[in-house]
Image (cartoon, rainbow, N blue to C red; front, top):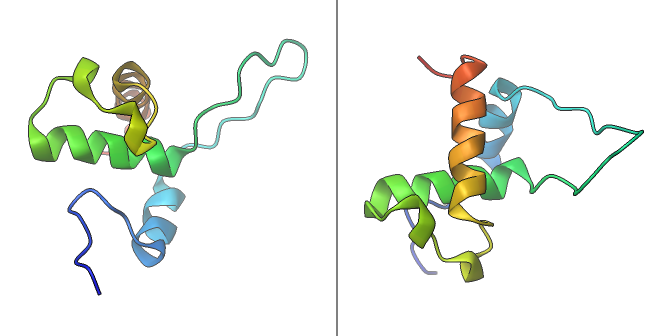
Length: 84
């Protein structure tokens, strides 16, 4: 079995992390684009922090969405005081 990568979050850990994240209701009147899943964005954040690459160089082919999306979500979660 292959060793998991440092930015991959298993189901057990995600169950704990997910409880800490604020719930965002989708707007009904002008919904816009659907939000990228929190788990993938969180893994994208971990990838950037682990590798030290710039946000704009986050490889979208890994499924994390854009680096800007990950950066914004990190800022959103920081503002919501998910972590100190």
